[in-house]
Length: 279
Image 1 (cartoon, rainbow, N blue to C red):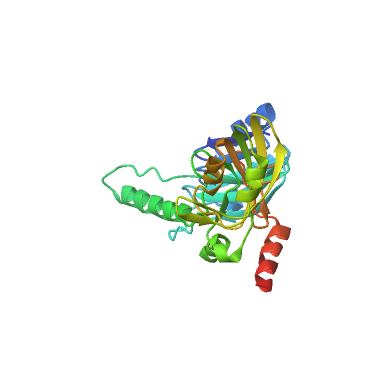
Image 2 (image 1 turned 90 degrees about the vertical axis):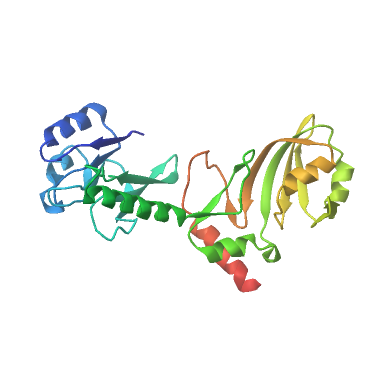
């Protein structure tokens, strides 16, 4: 897949050059900034002849963003950051990459020039709005710097709290690679519940996937205290050299690759809602 970005500084002036680029590089998606035209004057038909559908958030004479697509794109949204000035600077959509949904964002940041003018003041305000927009998205739980895997993102504080509260008993499943001699009997005893450094850990379940000097274990927790998996392994004199979270509640990592993200599956979210109806 090819995704390209181009600050065209007037789409109508450079329409012919854009067509040349589409024919030469054949990108799946082309993100355009500073198109400087209203939606009604955008050269949709010209790009449609090349097999590209246009999604436009235009503005007369200034700014404006657009996405040209010859592949499927859904959930197009304009001004998702809720800029009160309504300047046309952000358009987003969902695309499929390796059978997973990915958010495509076309954004045109104000340049703020010259400094001693209202344009610079507006740029600072706009960036503050953008920062607040980003901060609305928070993580459920945490992964330390030496861990990887599933990280849930949401702007709903109720979802965060419900998943994190130990009393709700949401499953956290980890796949762990450890170095050392794995004492299976001792692990079975610890799995019944253990106190480590004055911290009491609840019972957990486990499955040994591979046993040698670098063993793989799958561990299911229902509490999620800080460094719980690492502390459990330390009692067994095992060194954790890989820790992957593969499930949090009904939400699963599946085949998601590092750096990718998708919207929660409808079935998973339904399972989350149904769980609360039972407790």
